[in-house]
Image (cartoon, rainbow, N blue to C red; front, top):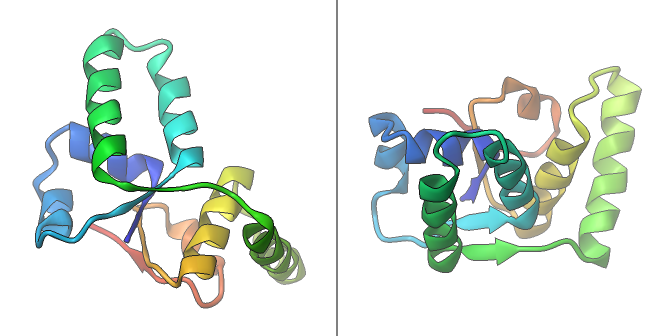
Length: 125
């Protein structure tokens, strides 16, 4: 399962719904794009030190996903599909969806716009 940025935020906030999805001992996948988005959000946070520490621990416990040539191919197809359907989504989320397609993994997110991407499964909490 791939964690979206809002899933990371909910996890660190102690959301019991998200913890239910992460139980079971399976290692989750964390896109480096999500790490960057989360770190950007921390720059103006009063809890920057604490949350940075939590993020660093999460990174150590996760399979980190970076972009490669295969990801770019999925990205192009997804972006074209969204354009054709007239359902754009944020740019970083297209990359996250491309990773989900590449690795055939669901995305743990409460962003409903992932539902516009064909053949991607989104898990809400």
